[in-house]
Image: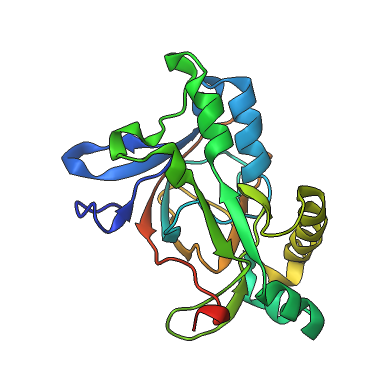
Length: 239
């Protein structure tokens, strides 16, 4: 699950320092959400309940996610995945050409700013201890990224921390994003994982969208995870 090599593993926005220098994140509901400010919870759920990739606002978003289930509810709490390669490949040639030329502004500054105004007991464990500045939480990435080895293209326009397409207004950007997000909902792109105790799952965060299914109310769901640092996203324009 974890590695003592902190140069290879990615510190997360919500983080708990484990023993032996390993870094993990604990996803522990309902306990973890109850301890947070309601506005922060609402902002987080608005991200996590839609298909997304993790931390796209970073200059080097995570390459892959490693997650293990410690406790699971009797029912519900699945994680759904959507194939970002196929979403892109099924687009019309005109839409592909449009998206190939677009960049996206991603920003984690809003949650950071809200968090800083809260009393300490209500704050997320943001990365003050890991040397991150607020300026590093906003970056521009291509809307369509390519695999660094295969050159295969995939959609990289995700609702998580999305601000706007470069050169577009927020309203214009949101209209296109909503359409793209609706495509990711199509079931023929999906895989759905039902967690059992000690299920260990690894997925490619660059080319796979995911979302939690929050249908287990107040039953306990306790997962731990770590993330591997990825490369800076590039498009066909960069080659």
